[in-house]
Length: 153
Length: 115
Image (cartoon, rainbow over all chains, first blue to last red; front, side, top):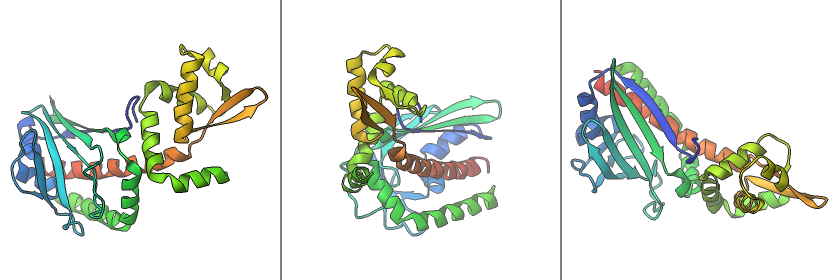
């Protein structure tokens, strides 16, 4: 947690040019490939993006995000309700979190900085309950992803 | 103890939101950091090491106390405040969960762009 928000911050070095990473982030088909969601159409700033989640066991859940900023090769951001996996819960009334992907060129290729903020505004408890319900499923799912990544990298 | 358990059972969803909101402030985080030292502190003790007025400290402690992060007990004429880590453990669990999901998601992105 940093000093003003209980948020998430990740840095990852990618051995690929900024333009390649930008395409993987903002082309809706490429995004869907690593995010595991089949999107209905391209990302447009200010508009909602929708799609079908492709994680086994969660195909019945619709993925939703509102695209905020598309600043080529620099910044891609959206707001969403993270891991809102319980179809019986209406998440639309809750304040979403903000996800930002920032790109920087570096010697090895691209530095990607991911932040997710705004957790202080959401009733996280309800979501925590949803996770607990699905905990077995997610644990298995994370193992699946891990083995997939180690096989393909 | 019994009071705390009752509070947690009855007010869970709202309680967690209050914890997030209570921590979303630099001054209150600083107070929590001080109280994390372990020893219960009075308002005067907290005011000594701070630029804040006693009134401001009292107000912020009230927010933290309602969120359940801080609890107080009377000791003679003073009220002593201490840190209660219990509500934070749930938050850590939640953020850890979201954080781990991002780790996995970003690894998939990495393997895609480095192909």
